[in-house]
Length: 322
Image (tube, rainbow, N blue to C red):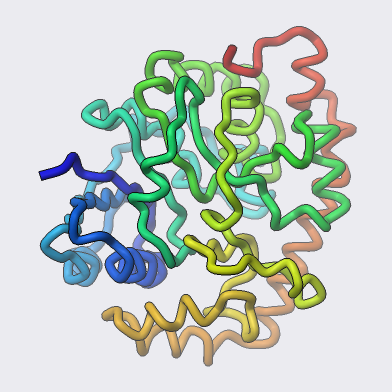
């Protein structure tokens, strides 16, 4: 048997239906010649949720549940700068930064957000060579037309906008991350400087790994855009990522939504997901749009903060892993 291909998801109980769609789509596209291990990192999934997700396993698709403990996360404080999109605090966004140390049995792995759908074989992504680069990731095309985010990336994060990666899909060089003590360096930066971020895990990855990133084709992280950019739709995407507020279970006519519903109907949550879309009100949609505007306003302000990643680098502080 070939070595298993490890694919990590980090989820909470309320996000299990969307993870089920992701795993079902994975099952639909895996090769019978390969063995795949889906490792679900979580805190407190219910037994029913575990059973529902486990029902998606197959002969060469194994599901493993790993409950992360508070000790691994006690360094991540509930501070405003650690909020996701400046909106709320969830330590789960940081799980991916600890995976290399938590799973020493793997030298390489795929990490994927749960708001994704596969349309290709993960084995093809896994085969991409990383050399001594720390991660493989696609540039974040979801913000390339968003002025405040472009300014924030350049003037606060301090990396060229075209090199700014999206952390929702990662090919991770676990052995190199351990060798370079990535986790220790991350915790040192987090606890010493408390940099205010729009997307904390993503921004730390961008500055720490800059110069040691293998850039993946956009087809491995195809993200929806507004209808005015319909001509930029990726042809034959291998992995769709419903990033930010482009959720087909909340909005109609989301780019690539057909891939989501095609997999959703095969899961134990098929009716529940339909109900979520039906019950999502116009007021809730408007609130999502307000949150997006709040995020963009915050992004506009952050370059003026006294402590940014860019300013730390200009002061000679070690931010990037050499």
